[in-house]
Length: 99
Image 1: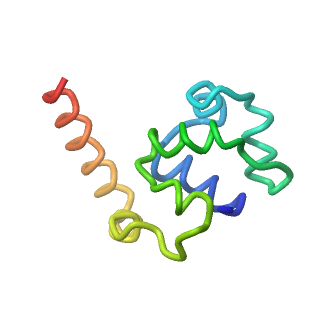
Image 2: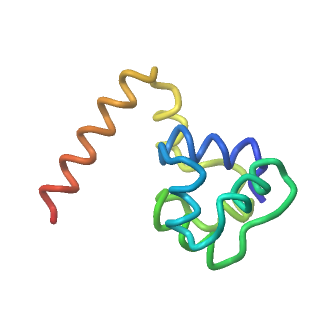
């Protein structure tokens, strides 16, 4: 499984959500998200499936069946915060155009 520190990085850096926002999206409590991020609990399969849909990460990666994250994560995380925010804006604009 992904470690608590990695879950927190996914939530903060990729999803840009609070613990409560993520909890609402995956159908759990903020306290459970906190416990997962401190390595005191794990997400259920249905929560992992929801995270896969939200984050765009393969379920095999979230279950630690793949050693490496998808290549786009490393490229995204290598960007400074300003460039990540700019890229996020482009992605959100593209999503709105597709709706």
